[in-house]
Length: 88
Image (cartoon, rainbow, N blue to C red):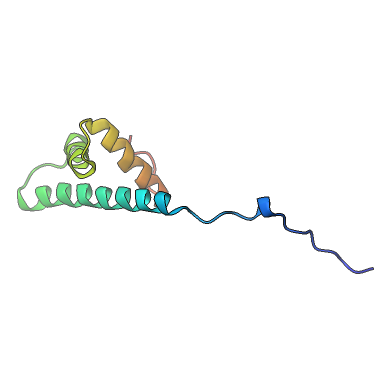
């Protein structure tokens, strides 16, 4: 008796990411990179001790947010997607 493979239904096939989702993700990656590099630059060039507060401030600037902690939460989400856990 021949073996039958299960039929794939439309709902079992993952849908491709939407363009808007990709743009948001790219914006978050760029903002996170900007904040991290600005913090690193200040540390190396200006001899400023890197701190959580400093990173949060740079992230708020990069994401154009008023709340440093909201910006730091975005950095934390991005960090987790690349395998770095628990900045918060």
